[in-house]
Image 1 (cartoon, rainbow, N blue to C red):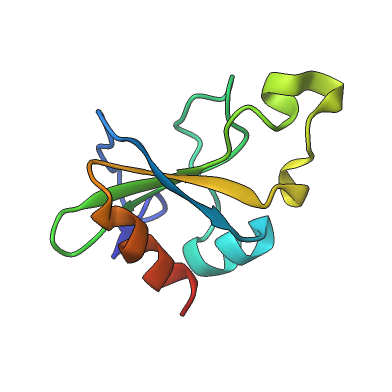
Image 2: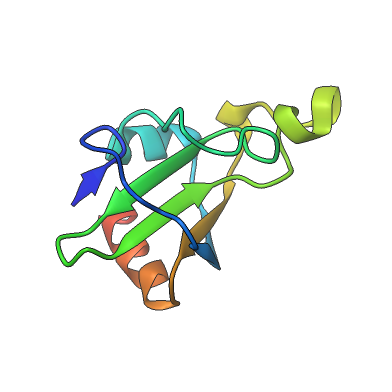
Length: 101
């Protein structure tokens, strides 16, 4: 598995496939720092992952942080509701496997 910290990962046409409840700190522990290449209007952090078989995933918050909600939004470190993006539902189990190990 590679992340946005290892290489540029093409995630075009990915869409919401599921959700995960996990801390920002745990995401950093497992995946490293978030990407700096994402829609920072609706999201405050995003990770891109590419699995060995070429399957790609994104993990991101959506419309609940400071970037979208301003002063009423959550601090990134306090976000626990993360979206999992991909091309099909199988990506949710793949991501869960990495993050829950």
